[in-house]
Image (tube, rainbow over all chains, first blue to last red):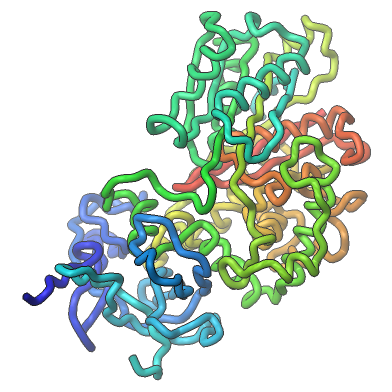
Length: 148
Length: 396
């Protein structure tokens, strides 16, 4: 039986391959952008509030900073306790058009040694974890010019 | 300028991993603070507790818990929660009650019994909680955020891991002199460099532990202090509990993204800098007036960031200030003479209160081998999860 593909969070990203993007929202009154998405009210204190429409975020940005988790994070992060922990790289990425910094995991195999602040990365689809029935999908940052 | 309140007493339960209830630590600290003030528990008109979220139901109602353990005597009670800033909010609530004439004497208490290992969010499936989300989606523990800040400083300001290690060397030397500290051993730069990487570029000895501990203050009106014959008490001159200004453009715990600055230009000051600025404004002083500072060194690199956010030096000059010895004992502006979180480990609701205890002892000249000579003005600074500013200015 094919397993269900489920986003780890609903409505934060869309697409499968080259059209994969993070999804935010934009206020129709002041044009402020929000990620994670705001669907209730615009958070700009100078805005009377408009409708919040879903928008794709820029697919590419530059590394603001990066680090890694050398030790297994606690739940609700899901890991297999039977397997040794492999360090996971985290990248904070500045998107120029939105002037926002978005944190994400790097694609598997990318370590801190591969990264520099200011280098370009792009957002790609990824798998956070999977079990017998469900594949939980997420977003990942990948240095541009590196094959998946 | 806001009117002042007096600090009549300060007390702590030593930090450690004692494996007992937070109530015990809080009561021990409260009794020590009352003894230090020379007051009976029955003379306290109000108790303000800084909440722990561990070891009980959510937002453990600390004020009443401590009041009951000390023996119900009918005092007014309040409890506050603001993560790492809970202690400063407890001080702020106590001060407001005193200045409003609601109470002459207020006991402020914070205590925690921390779990082993990484802090983690409360249980359950809570996709609308940003603190739950960052663990669920990214596995982003607190140290990974500290790692991001540290790497950013290295890239932008040229800080090095050796600079970070020197913060630990400085603070551990002070912790060795502090009977309330958990870690009483001096640490060398080589030992920091030999410790395991936790969140690149930070190593185990760059990152503060999580601890058990308790701290308490007895605050009163200036009039009450005079009536009791305390002519020149330590006074609290400012308490900053500000929130960020939109757009907040520094990635803060527990967020997955910053605010967007595409439409609204960021404020002149970052959130952390605005915390100190509000305290300076309220106290009518500037960084040049300080004798000492206690800052929240969750990581060694973050202490350097605080130097800049407090205006002790210009942006990017934190490591230089450290290397010059300005923030060491005998320097121009000694920082974390208590030993800091590096020597204590974090006991969340107690920590901001413990910072004020250290200022109190320093300003009274009671800090023993840690004493900063001629200390007249001190500031504490800290930042709580979810946008809680925390800074206290005390003078004598």
